[in-house]
Length: 261
Length: 261
DNA sequence: AAGTGGTCTAGACCACGAG
DNA sequence: TCGTGGTCTAGACCACTTT
Image (tube, rainbow over all chains, first blue to last red; front, side, top):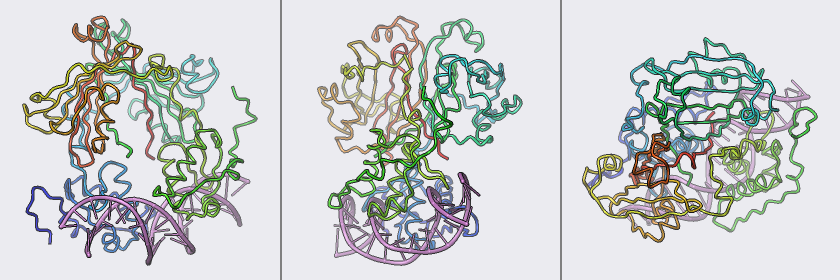
């Protein structure tokens, strides 16, 4: 039936019909989530190629033994992730891979991740102090109230890339320096039962003063990328305020925006 | 600061019961969208205060004459926007306003918007040229293929803040300089039927060289914020590639992240 | 005209969290 | 224990795009 005579026509994935999705109704994992994960894996592994049509939702639901809303929920979650695109009268297709892939070009970016050499962290300071004005304002406490301050040096390939300064409300959690050097602050927060909801960030730039330059192994006057962030948990309580500076010669922020249409 | 007798208790919004939502089944606007907009407006105007419970979904659907899935869809869209939080066994509540508000502190940020003085734009260059290597790679065309290049100077209060250089595929749309100076590139794209899907951005920093400094009215060696971006439409086709530089002394990126849990 | 996703209904049962 | 949101079903009709 699908006889293509044109250039790169969108075609229903030939593999999809033979793809068997293993749905387990005995696990607590929601069916729509199981389906979404398996679809995502299929996309990731190239079983579903960019531009492939997913097949219509009604057929899919019948074949999988699910209701249409459940199938839709699975598909919608991948649309929200930017992996799929729905088009009325056409179908649901896999977005072209170019859209998904990180920029390979950015020579600024250290590919330490690929090199298997994860980022290292050195804790320079970790104590309870009176909160300075900016931290107090961000955390919603009185100036001078107790807060935990954390200063860390982030390294890649043994060389510094960033100087991280964070303030947390006193008593929020117990921080172990050893774990901080291996695990990262956000994972520790999560482990302690803090459910992150959102964060506000400001990214700017400035030139390094003498001390910063020395600590980051840069010449004075070098460009620095700055980031300040306040993070909130799901009750709206501020749980972290940080001011970070990055060596612009070795680091850049790379991220993807999804457009709300 | 607010004087609280203990932590602010979550209370069902007293106003919600008297709030009348006007749902019009004769318009093509989906019911869930109408409800979402009116809920959002109520939150925006403070009718629904932070921490207020929305009331359970079943009651709401009965009162509104809608099915529960429809009400859920409306609520979910606001949860996705970060305006509401759902908690099992508790209810749905409005997030605390602090989470939603932009950082007022960032002195870097020009509050030109508030001052009613919108950003001005001056088109410095607008022609069809052979695409340079980086633009060609980003746009997915051969190096040297035709592309439209656009150089603009962005001003606030009559002073430069940014130098924007963009490449677009040749023939994508007709660009009118006059409109470019008043409307912005993205609005023009949308008007021309381009449906934006996503963009990849890289944000970095560097110091200004002599020419950049002169054009931006900064001293040589000043810190610049750099941003490069490739935008894609919903078919996965690259529609724009841009490299922008901002005066760090007058501009910073401010944005909110929502955490996927 | 046919096929697709978009919306909507009216129920059901379950899992989690608070009291 | 009880109330909440979380999940799921089996239909229905509509709007849009393509043929």
